[in-house]
Amino acid sequence: MIMPENYSLNSLEFLINFLLTHFPGKVVIMGVGNQFWGDDRAGLEFITKLKHKWHSTQSFAPVLEGERVLISAGEFPEDWLIRILDFKPEFVILIDAVDVQAEPGSIAILRREDLPDSACFSTHRLPLRSMVNLWEKNGSKVLILAIQPERIDFGERVSSSVERSINHLIELIPPLSNFKSIFFEFNPLLGKKECGI
Image 1: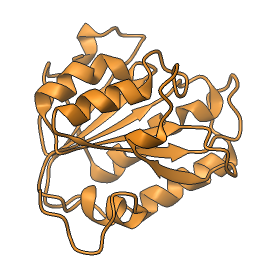
Image 2: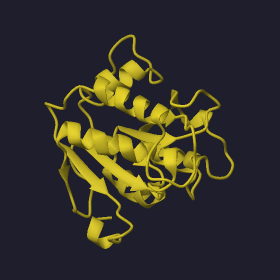
Image 3: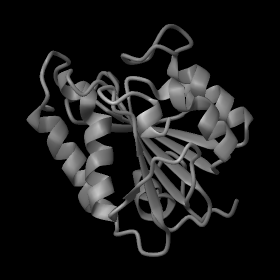
């Protein structure tokens, strides 16, 4: 794995300008969250906007494919655990609303050692650290792009502070010209088989 000089895995500039669009290996970008629970849907909003910017092709195939794989995982990122292990990406990037005790809309890049060992880190069933640990043991580097929520309550819209942060990130990401991106989605209204999961 060849890294450019003077870049850190904890650098937002590295993630935006190199890893997402120029890195020659396979990258999985997964948004997680509850679409009906306010700012908890931040990861899903990010993936939706990135899919449109990159003109990603939606796939219903039973296996992951392509150089850039976008996954809108909903509340069940753990359902993608084995498929990502089989895909063997060089990088997995998770986007999630996480309480990092910062101002609403703040963005932090977390690593496995930043995550608690205990119960679920956000609103998901399997502790995030457990998934990250398994992917890293399989040879993938994992980064968590954490967005500080303003409110987690019933509603289908994110707060203005979180929306501004998502839009800012999307504006910073260059168009994807050298790689093909594939989009996968879990739709709880359709069921797993119809969504290729």
